[in-house]
Structures are given as structure tokens and as C-alpha cells.
Length: 197
Image (tube, helix red, strand yellow):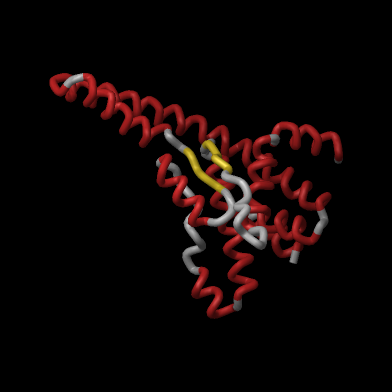
């Protein structure tokens, strides 16, 4: 399986991520770290491209604020402030919420105007065709790709943590919390990986 995923990694990065996750689930952290190192290099290239797009977005947002303020001058300071807040929310309030138990996560995200993971779109169809285990696995990979995508886009992550009312721990939240932790300390992990191999 790893040979297939490794070969597919030359075509699309998601295969490398999937390969690293499979290594983690197998308990082979050395190979998972090697694959993660490849992904870290790809991420640096993506970050450079993202920074250019981010600067262009910030300039556009500033232009929108100025335009909205000019049009709102007759309505008073309150309207200007609200208009600027709306534009800022569109341009810069990039926040996601993770945590155990999606109802709890969605409720908090709605309160603060943040985004959450939307369940795997084809979960039920995949489950009907191939069974629960494969549907759960693909759903987990979809969740991981979503979270990594938000990290690359520099979203702020709000982690609600464990739901103490649950009897069983969520493997999806475990994966999210590990990815968020690794991302938080990515510079240290990259330095460690350079010295380890």
C-alpha cells in the first residue's frame, strides 16, 4: 500500500498525507516523519505563493473599507464602523473551531462567526457501497486535508478540547489535535527532522 501511495505522491500531495497517516496508524513514526518532511517542503512552496495572494487580498480589503467609509459618511460613524467590520470579517476573520462532538463545535463556531469542518460529503454513499470502516477512514482523511488546508491559509484555530460528557474519545478529534499541535510547533519539528536523518 505504501508503494502505491508513495508513487501517487508524485502526482498529488494528498497521497503523501494519506501515506503519512497510514504510517501513524501503523505506529511507524519514523516513516511518517520522513513523509511529513516531504510535505513540509511542499508546504514552504505553498506558503510563498499564499503570501503573495494574501498581500493582494489585504490591499483589496483596505480599498473596500475606504470605499464603504466614503459612501457611509452621511450615515454617521456607526455605519462606517459596521461597514468596516463587515469588510474585515470577509477579509481577515479567518478562524476555525475544532473539538470533540460536532454539535458542540458548530454551536460555538456560530457564536463567534467561525468555520467548522463539514462532514465528508459522500460518507453515506461510501458507507453503503464499501462499508463503515472505509467510509470512516476516507472521512478522516477528508477532515485532515481540510484542516491542513486551513493551516496553510493561516487560519486561527480555536480548540474546544475534549467533551467530558462523551464515553468514548473521538479518533477524528485526536487526529485534529495532533495535526494542530504539530502545526503549532512546526518549526521545531522541521529542525528536529533535519537533525534526525
